[in-house]
Amino acid sequence: MSRFLTVGAAQMGPIQKTDSRESVVNRLVALMAQAKARGCELVVFPELTLTTFFPRWFVKDLTEADHWYETAMPSPVTQPLFDFARSMGIGFSLGYAELTEPDANGLRHRYNTQILVERDGTVVGKYRKVHIPGHEEHEPDRPFQHAERYYFELSPEGFHVWKAFGGRMGMMICNDRRWPETYRTMGLKGVEMILCGYNTPLHYAPDPGQNVLQGFHNSLVMQAGAYQNGTWVVGVAKAGVEEGVDSLGQSCIIAPSGQIVAQTISNDDELIMARCDLDWCKKYKETLFDFDRYRSPEFYTAITAQRGVVLED
Image (tube, rainbow, N blue to C red):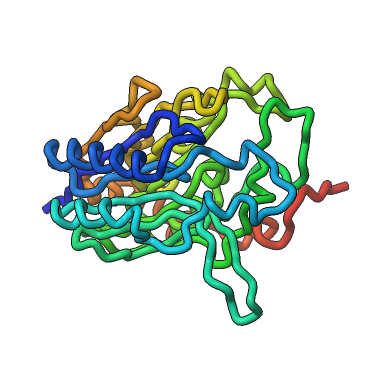
């Protein structure tokens, strides 16, 4: 008997600098209400859902940016989202900027974070972004900054898979989706659905020639990752023109076959959904991508033994 999970990808339109968290939470609740009315059991929201994409600005003192981060989840502002979800019996995944409590050395840490919340309101998983793109220093010649490597630290935990929603769930954030190691690490843990929030500007300063390919590359990497690991992938954008920066939408739900089964058509708040058969994963995990039978890890040692390119003579 197949295991079905009805998933909603809740794309967000722009969130401007002046928009309050309360107004954003109201939009999230409205999308969740739509999802519940359409039979969804899980709703996936984008990366850094609660604020504008603040790494587009550079500040000399990081503490000046503390107001963009969440120090607790749920917080008094986000509690209504948790309460509404629990009352509706619907789960969700939410991306946000996390500022931790001081550690044993008195240091606070900053992460680009995503959580998974079950239908009863319990947080079953937290993921912190591994592949952090952009730059660490101020680059004033750019039309806008992409200073994620200044605002966020590398995840100390890496990739995990959680038993939830009747399956094996994983999470990744934005740039993680471009790296095949992301999917394969979770694939080796039996993942059946990967949830991914993203903010992707259409302009790529290091090589503007890639601008026109942003939508193609977005679907290319997620479709390949889904197919090569026999897993569902749910990619959800924050889209549209935000603080003058045009960002990609094209949120989509991708089957283990690599096929897109649902995709947004706007750059606004928009809900798409799919009834996902988690047992469809077996058709790929137990045939063409039977890892135990066909993988040859003895030939892949360079993947973890080195970081950059090493040219052979």
